[in-house]
Image 1 (spheres, rainbow, N blue to C red):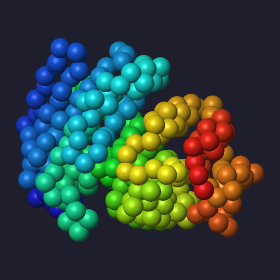
Image 2 (image 1 turned 30 degrees about the vertical axis):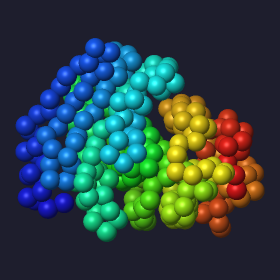
Image 3 (image 1 turned 60 degrees about the vertical axis):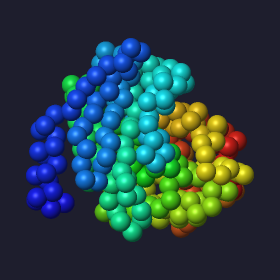
Length: 277
């Protein structure tokens, strides 16, 4: 990032966000729009006094995550694990693969807004769990690459294009998934997963059968179980073959792109029930 751009982002952050609280208790933290980001709002649902981490829910392109954090299943999960719930509401006018601008690219302002929103809501720099669908997957996966040390793990479902991981990246665990009927997204998503695994990254993969571009009902429950395993210091991970769906005795370095990592052996039966090779 250039020196001038860094100064510009710092100036925006120094202006400070606007905060409001709705009747239902959901707090809204809003940042001033930029040339690339026309809306930068974050909705906060508090589930405990001292959260151990923040769970960030990012909807599809230019969508509003407020409804996501209102869902009872996410609220119950956040309460159970003492998490701050954050709903992402970002929008950009030019979200194209050849433009590389806008909130999809977390390093271009949106990621810093998220960090500031979590800090303001909690009074600290909480570690993050990220869940993103479509446009939200773009943001979640690139935030994990932009700020890997802040991220416990993430789930990125059905993005149109991906930034390839590189050998020296210290990327956190990730759950990459897509429906096999999701046209132009399935191939790039699977290839992105395989590139990461070829570099030895602890990534998981799910193919959802006969699924187009929409969130399958099986994804959120598995994502929650996946996040719970990442939060459990006693969880014991395992390696699985994404083709045969067998548990492997150890990581097979000979063909890493054909294997996936699950953060807990207890996830295996759940994963096998929803994944189709």
